[in-house]
Image (tube, rainbow, N blue to C red):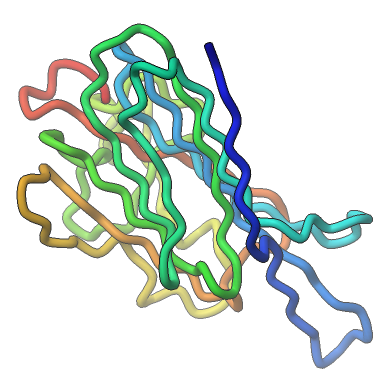
Length: 203
């Protein structure tokens, strides 16, 4: 049986331009999907909500999962949303959603007993949103070519990249911080994921 969880928080970032009297509301929506065979995939939507009426006033976490197989989760904390991609034992898929905001400007993704994908020594590359096989998402492969995260953002993005986080008893944990000033003005999307340490299956 599936269930839905909703939690309250601010979900939009408002920025006032010096050249226009209008306010810009920009949000970053994050969706984490996982299934036993597909593994764990974090799909991130960098979305501009400018011009859309009725901005939502809540931070949303929606979990769709079999009640007995709850293991992967996204939890909002102090300044960041933390998502854990755990090994799945069942076959029921999960879907988690979160949003960046002025108070929650970072995302932390923990790949338990797995490796972060795509592999990138500069920690600036991500995969296209429709990526199905993360072990083939590489900078030098045309089939599923990774993209530079900073090309999806605005402003000075030189310092924006995935940062490694050291945690005991976890495989790979990385954190991405996006200042409100760097959120895009048009919808953008990309994906990252987790691979098992043997790199034979996508997680």
